[in-house]
Image (cartoon, rainbow, N blue to C red):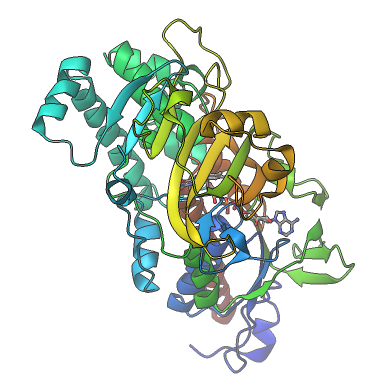
Length: 512
Ligand SMILES: Cc1cc2nc3c(=O)[nH]c(=O)nc-3n(C[C@H](O)[C@H](O)[C@H](O)COP(=O)(O)OP(=O)(O)OC[C@H]3O[C@@H](n4cnc5c(N)ncnc54)[C@H](O)[C@@H]3O)c2cc1C
């Protein structure tokens, strides 16, 4: 087909398509946020654009000084050899985007068999009064038989329920569900609306899961993963908490997956750069204004962060503005200590080992609450053992993580270690103290996952996309990455659609 110069100028305005004798102009894409969703959007859009031979010029704006957003590490004693996850820590075997990206970028999983190394039970469920369950990695058939005796067939039924929910969710990765313009419709199509529309408690009851197993095991898992009791988290997110097979993390930090994605996309990352305004123009392009006052023009804008925390002004208001929704305010405390926890603080005999992971649940007498309840925290765990070369003499330190609904104070730390810890040590650590290093962080970690059957729109306006509606459905690194990939595919489909209609337009003009 030969295109005539004067005919092509009759075509509607487009930035990517021009005459065959000119190189097509690259599509200008802005991604706001370099967390899991924004990095994945950049990575997948670059792949899709390349496959479709559509030049794309992708710019990633990130207000933090690093890539990864809620997936980031901090360094114990500020030493880069000792990184610990501060946010998103674990992904699992069925998290295909994360697992494949780790392989593609040659990132190795961290090895984990600390409990055996420390000769501690690996997990205990504490209800504020007693450990209702303690497990050891090397548990044999006799201990498993004891679990069966305690909980009957509930673990097996729960496993089946979880597999069914995960199986439905996985159909969202492929056509005909993928890519979806409406998450609400996609969730309905895959048959998960009934599961997101009820609480975990209702879902488990309706499926005949015994109360004891729900309370002692499943709730311990919803508390450590989403800081929620079963009456305040939806059924699907409850099932996500039980999908633990092949749990892993990347050696040195999961953020490397997202940094590698941005790098592989050849996008230009602008760190320490806050976008303050998105403004739609007459020609349907967008002007993005940075906090510095600089403005640039884009054809597509992908908003890859919960709108309510972006401080963005969007003008004019888009067709759909995401609702402000309640997020969990989660206190994460990381610290190092040469000491193990005091068994007496957990009503164990002096000298007994305290499990490496202490999960929590409510005691049977306590009415359901929308907070941590009487245990006062969600979990305490040992994540690593590092040599503290700053102390005199140098000695090995355990690195702990606590999830709690309030700031950890000196009386709490004094209690769990059975020794006096001062306020200043609790705030800053003291290299020779019980707390040799400490880092306090408050996160808006994830939405309160209350039951719901509708989710925020993916397309906020023509050329304006949103990834964070996904978080009310399932909030994980993987699902954010999937949401970014979904938007990338929709953007590409839009470009291809425009190209096809341009071709149609050319034909039509030529035939005249
Ligand atoms: C303590 C904690 C534990 C967790 N544990 C797990 C876990 O074990 N497994 C798991 O899978 N998930 C876990 N998660 C959840 C997971 O980390 C998140 O779901 C995921 O990282 C969210 O990615 P995102 O890209 O959607 O959002 P974010 O990571 O929040 O990324 C959004 C980015 O946008 C940037 N931004 C916002 N506004 C602007 C602006 N105006 N201009 C420029 N940049 C802007 C922000 O700085 C941020 O970097 C955990 C989260 C927390 C906090």
